[in-house]
Structure formats: structure tokens, C-alpha cells
Image (cartoon, rainbow, N blue to C red; front, side):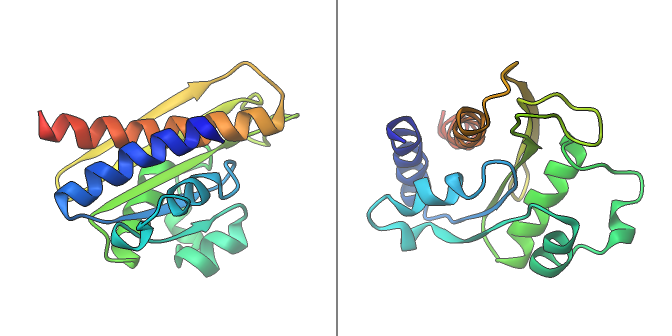
Length: 164
């Protein structure tokens, strides 16, 4: 978790310096993104909340995303990650939304993605960025850590680019 802690501290410092907040919607990382951010002292200054959106029921109940909104989308894709980040940001009234979705392993998902497949998105007022990672590994716990680090790194880089 030390890599995640260092990334979370980078994100926290950037958000605090900007006076901004983040909302999280994660899936295959299983709460590790939120845990890393909440481990930073003073997290209440920048973290407004998060959800582990692991099933269609969680998507509907926790995020208020109806099945109809999924028409033409599939989970574990960049467009879905962008939607999750956008909804988390809006619902929790945060400056930033950060999401992650994928297939941690040891098997792939029902959409044909191999284990180690992860999509993440960062959404702000005028920023929307998504990316895909393929670890090539079927090691569930290691993939979960890698997925969380991938998402946090995306947010850190986005915030740092805005300062440049």
C-alpha cells in the first residue's frame, strides 16, 4: 500500500493547494482508491465520498444510474469509466470525479476482457480524460493495487498538468 499512499499524498497535496475536492467511483480496485485517499491526514479537506460500484444493482442504488443509461455502453470500458466519474462528481458535488472499472482476475469478465484489464477516468469542470491499462496478469490482489495506482496517477498527472 506504500505506493498507493505516496500517490494519494500527491493527489491530496494538489487538491488542497487548489482548494478542490474529489469523488470516487471504483469497481475492481475494491475500495483501495478511497482507502488510500482517506489514509492521508486531513482527507476531509479534499475527499467528499466514494462508492464501490461492483454490480448493476450497486450502479443503480449507489450511483442512481438506471439500466437505460447503459444502452450502448458496457462495463470495463472507457466510456463507462467517464460516465461513472461524471456521475460521482455530480452526485457528490465535487470538483473532480475519479473512476476505475475492470477485470481484476483470476478470470476475465463476461465482456471478453482479460484479467488485468482496467479503464479509468478523470472528470472535472472542463476536463475529461480516460485511459486503459492491460497488466497481462491474472493475480487479483496485485491487479487491484495496480488499478488503484493507475487511477490515482491519472488524477495526480491531471492536477499537476493544470499547475504547469
